[in-house]
Length: 294
Image (tube, rainbow, N blue to C red):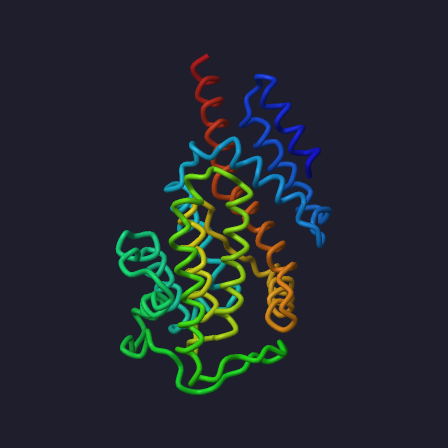
């Protein structure tokens, strides 16, 4: 990784366009991933790319465009990974509710008293248009289990005590987000991301709701990482097995290595799909316009 960072620094100091380096590096990543020549237990490649992207691009990221692209093009993955039937009346309600949930996440309103209990607000939004919306935004009052995972979920009577405990970690993260942004230090940024992923795993293990836990908790974590200008993350259906395997290892063995590595790859995916690809399209449009004029 050190050699890659030295190469990047040398490229920047050469006077060439640093964004060219970034785009070519990420497009190379995208190609290797499409050929299944990328994934491994080592997150060196995505870590180096994320650091390079933020070292060069920290002050020029068009973050509002990134969030808009996520909602418009990739929010559907959240429903697909949970096998929500888009043709079923209940599925349609949840897909529509997911849009309401992310509208709330991307509004200033969410910042008022933002803490672990904001999960209730997100759950309420997810099921806002259900036949019985009054039942949304409440914790389960019965015990549940996740078949095939081996994960012991919290007893329903322990949901609030466990959330209170994890809320202390969440508030520390929330209070640190401004310093993380202002530091402009990719190492601090990635450390913050890792802590968000640990919190996510703990929330999944608490499993506070009877339904919608994955979407609500991923939305909550996306809010936390967006606070430091990391892009929102989405998981595709073909990544479900790897995602669940890494989550189970974290929750059953207390080993977060694989899930943290998985999320570094997903940050790279989001940077490509929500930012780099848009820049490439814009450049092509400019080139076509010039060619027509000539």
